[in-house]
Amino acid sequence: MNNILNRYDLANYYGEVELRNKLRTTPIIILLLGVALLVVAILIKDNENLSTALLTIGFVCAGVGIVKIIRPGIQITHSATGETIARHEYTVEQEEQSKAEELLRNGNHEALKALSKPNSPLMVVTYSTPSKALFIGQMFHYVPYEYQPLGEPIVVKK
Image (cartoon, rainbow, N blue to C red; front, side):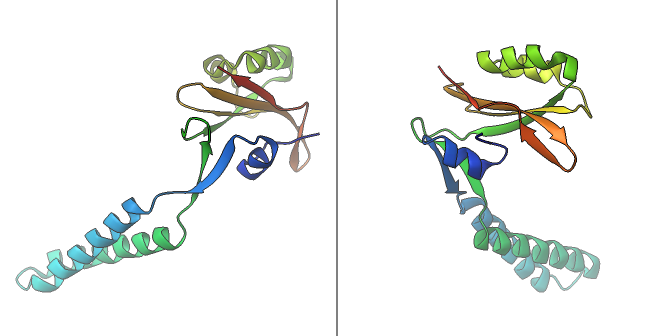
């Protein structure tokens, strides 16, 4: 049985899903901001407290920027539309399983969210584009230490 619990399994299961590295523009801006704050902190001689604060913030920004440049992160993208795919998890009660399955088949993301209850044995994992051009979902049942799929993934294209 196919399993789309994580993004790598989703990419292997559905051919129109791509895993891409996130853009490095924002981390570069954060790095430059950190360097600018360090330079300003070094140039300030009158106020030691302000200089120390700017040094701390500058080091943190520069460090975060460097880490994000080296390890950019991965985003899930729908290759047909180029949109980023968002992942959501909802837990539902056992008694609501048939209703949740129907909502999953219809691609009704908002109703699944309303049906969700914390700490329930069933989990619904959905992936969708902002335009709702693609909706993929699957229901899982909790067994000790892991979630196992209750059926095949459901794909809804609009």
